[in-house]
Image (cartoon, one colour):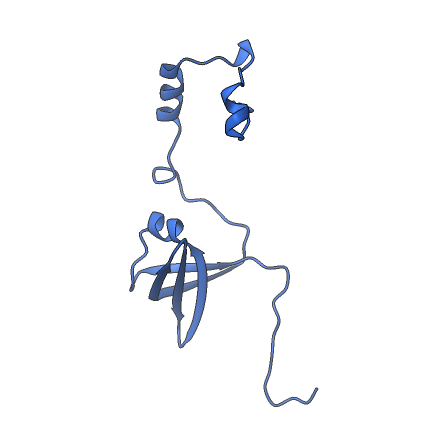
Length: 115
């Protein structure tokens, strides 16, 4: 079900849903309880091919963002995600995680060659 409610607070105050969309609060609560939560859902397969096993080396929280430094073998990768995502995932230094890279281009460099 999709309720097309205006996001503007002024419009939302004066908005009335068409009669065919009227739901009682009890019905809304029942539907929300029946919906699976991400924590209880099955693992999701991803289309991204580049999944790197990593260990969290450092987390810096700053305002709305979190900088997560990952150790992948003897290399490091830094990911900047939202603070709420880091908190929702319960990320801690030392956690084993996956870095998932989905990009249309990946450049490769090699030292010792002339341009």
